[in-house]
Amino acid sequence: MSPRIAYIAANTFREAVRDRVLYNLIAFAVLMSGAAILVGQISIDIERLVVVNLGLTAVSLFGVVIAIFIGIGLVSKEIDKRTLYTVLSRPVRRWEFIVGKFLGLAGTLAVNTVCMAIGVFAALLYVSNRFQRSDGWVLVALYFIVLQFLIITALALLFSSFSSPLLSAVFAFSLFIIGSFSEDLRGFAAISHGVTRWVATLAAYLVPNLSALNVIAPVAHQQPVAGQLIAFNTAYALVYTGMALCGAVLIFERRNLK
Amino acid sequence: MAAIEILDLEKTYSVGFWRKKHKCALKPLHLRVDEGEIFGFLGPNGAGKTTTLKLLMGLARPTGGSARILGMEVDDPRVKAQIGFLPEQPYFYDYLTAKELLEYYAHLSGVPAGEIPGKVGRMLERVGLRDAAGVQLRKFSKGMLQRAGIAQAILHDPKVVFLDEPMSGLDPMGRRQVRDLIEELREEGKTVFFSTHILSDAETLCDRVGILHLGELRSVGTVSELTSGVHEKVELTWAGGAVPASLKALGAEVHVMGDTTRAIVPEDKQDAAIDALRRERLRLISVTPLRASLEDYFVEQVKPAQATAGARS
Image (tube, rainbow over all chains, first blue to last red; front, side):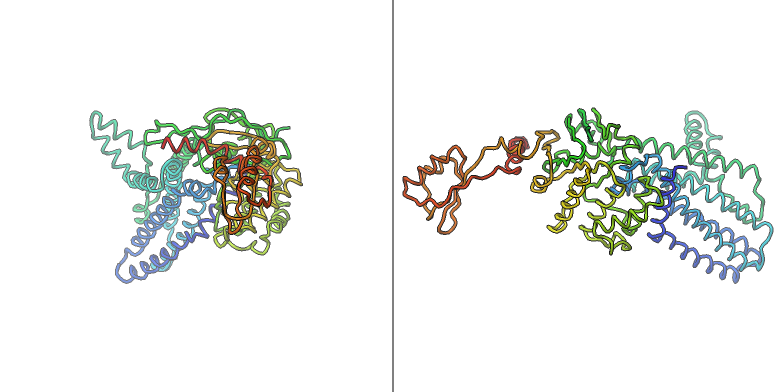
């Protein structure tokens, strides 16, 4: 990897930290502590289920909000503020800039997720008094959530490379919602006919299949995740992210900076 | 050898919702700047100066033509390691300190890691920001930001430095510091290409200037070459507030100042003007030739086109 990509990524991470993005961890900590204490008092035998469900859903939502709202500004903010001028007038290629920004935000989300994961496990320990073998699957669910973040960040970056922050946010958030129900979209395509079937099938394959990356419910019920699914989801997320990044690079390469 | 060679470089933007309208920002531009030269790129706002710089920096794609810096195409990474750029009204990552900002840019410019602390320290000292090295840029004044901008542009010891309106918005002290820095760059043998609409700065600093207006290069040359063609003028001063009627017919600009009157007339009307004063028995105090300034030349170049543009609108 080009060292310039690493410097751009490190600077993006530093920006997120100094802009107090990681302060969301405080809200998460309050939520998890409150939930653990409350759940311990009102639920019988399903404390673990509630904590895993609530914890992983919160990790996902907090991360998606960060991925979208920072991702949409990664390029457009640099253009608006013209900070990009002094970067691209150096021996930095445009694709290196895009990849660096992506890795910086992905790194921020990864660190954020690790901190939240510690919170989830602390809450689990609090309600169960000990860890169980099946708690290991929570790590797999967290890994899938990070894969979701990669896809969402790449999409936000793609939209950010050609549209305004507001439109980028609308596009990225819409894709997140549709992608979360992509299994239903595929189901609808399967029972449709004619043009509707074609359109629904095309849409189902174009939007990110985020529902396959959501294993929160089975993990909360202590069900294992198949190794094959882990391999498939990893490959799918990397390919989808790579394609979105390539799209962002192709658009950004042709763009005139205002 | 040419430091900058611009061959019929042009830029037209597609505007409007359907991008069907075209706006010409730069008409085919042909220009050569030699190594070690301080070149001033002058023009009123909207003349196309920033567009030219963006094309040279690879920030915008040209519609036609080409440009070479130090003999290489502008988007060649090798050339980018040898140029420095200060954009107009620069805005840097304001969450960084001045030291962190320069370290970041030094890394991106390919400065060896071992040399970075020394280079950054010396540069902060050179632009007078040593005491503010640990302060975040969001707390910087406009002048301090401009100095940080110049520091990032010359940090990696580039051969060619591009400065877009480097004196814009600075107070007299700030302008003086920037002028001194450009003089230092000249002494170091750097090529400096800077755009400005502050003509006195260009007149003081530049080996040659180019005047751009409405996207078109109107003229290029040394200040003395350009101003030699401007009609010379003479200032006449006499006692009293009386103004001969015939003087106005000679096209004189007359200003009555208390007990003296001053008139500026074209040099070829000097004798006729003095005769007019003698006929009225007015006491002539002085006759002073006025040197044509770059401003006179600039106004002469820009005025007719602006009048036409005004008439059109």
